[in-house]
Image (cartoon, rainbow, N blue to C red; front, side, top):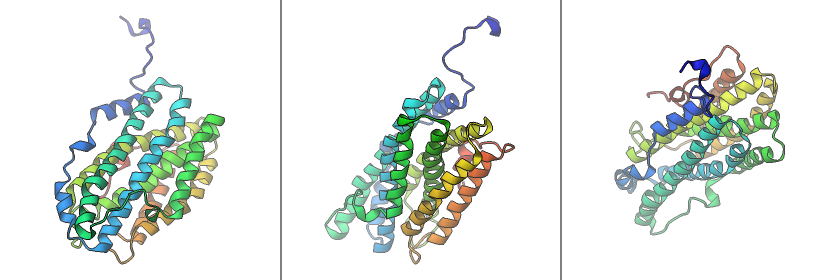
Length: 298
């Protein structure tokens, strides 16, 4: 049948939302398939400072994944493009998988190691792991996302994408991946190589490339169409950057093994600059999903 006579179907296979959805389907992984035995054995003899640093990282990521799983729901409600709906459905599923991975790691690695070391066990939800800046950032994200249910405007969508996809996933989480990859991959003599942790973070990072790319593309569309001014994006992100810098600075020890606060805050700043340039510069393109979360050495 000639193309001009074919009926219009619901899905557009060339749309970014559909392509990201298919990418998610093709790269499916199960957090229960990742082997954790080696990690558990290698952590038993770790010093207290390194072990505390690892627990902090895991708690922050686990709580963050749980929060964004909940906070994405308003976007799923307001989006009316079926291609975007497919993608957000896949993102909700992936955020749930990420939360599952961190829960499993705490149950099957952290708890047995804690019990072997001290005879006790901690909870990943304990307030000790979460600095004030972290709590404030996710409370602001919750408000920005749920505002869509009250008033779905281009400005509110831009703020929601800035909070969720750009700052939390594109800057803060990316910095966390960088810190983990360069601390627990066997390249730091003072730290054990944790293959299960690195594999889990690698899988999660691949998922987040789609999430970040979707949000950045939506922001770019809003700016290029004239629906919002680029200055709104700058204002929103600049209000959140001090929180991300505070979180990164408090989650790493100056004298601890691996990357220190200065290295991580510099990396976060570079992500901020790069993401904004890719969105607001009309001549720049949104990178592909792998490039968006590529780390040095990949």
